[in-house]
Length: 360
Image (cartoon, rainbow, N blue to C red; front, side, top):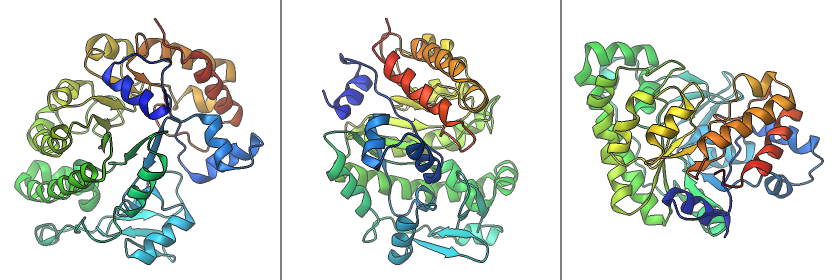
């Protein structure tokens, strides 16, 4: 059984030998620092050490995925998908959204739609331009059959909208001028639907979307507003994948317990990254028959500040809670940031390798 098969069988609840796993890093520098500390001479050796089961690729439009990677960023600039302002240290995508060039993670610096006139007149970029899916197609051909290749769907309908408008303006307008916001949401939804059709056409075996709907304590907007403005549009995007038989992984940080039943209702298969700000035992008991849980291992408290022994205990407990009887992709609850001590990362990886045999 290869890694791709193991993930797909996990999602389909077929028999597997051990739980698949995945570890992300917030920046290329963090990965390189760990690779050097472990004495691993190449990226291939490092990947073999991690034993990641998924390979995450992206469209060239998704500049935020490679804004720190000099080679990929230059490629995107040469192809017309990105623009770098070295004076302000900001990278712009084709939507006009500006992100910090060298931040450890994603930091929005510029939101182009700062007036009603600009929102009404905005035209979305055409996703089907030459080269947009070239890297995704190349990665799919290279890695599929070993790892499960997914085309990242981060910055979904909700996030793309508020990043275009600015978060404060979005929150004000969705309350005071909802029709204005809906017009922009509809444009973004049409873009996402076209992207979904391309993902299916290229032959990906699993779909991925992403929108951070939660804070540490609850939803960013009310459940009623989410159901009115986001659920039906997300359902339109997901229907493209579901009609093609692709399972859906959706990424959302925060405590989104309130809307999990709604997401299951429109076709969710895998919830990612599952932060422990939610009750993990409750999630497993309440939704374990419907969902695969991707993540769960705390990265906010213990991983950066605890001792290796603490990391091992916490990781093992999480795996046995969410992975009991299957239905889990072992992973940290978010990317590993640069403040995590290397010995804690090593403790995490070793624990995953030791505990991933399917817990009963």
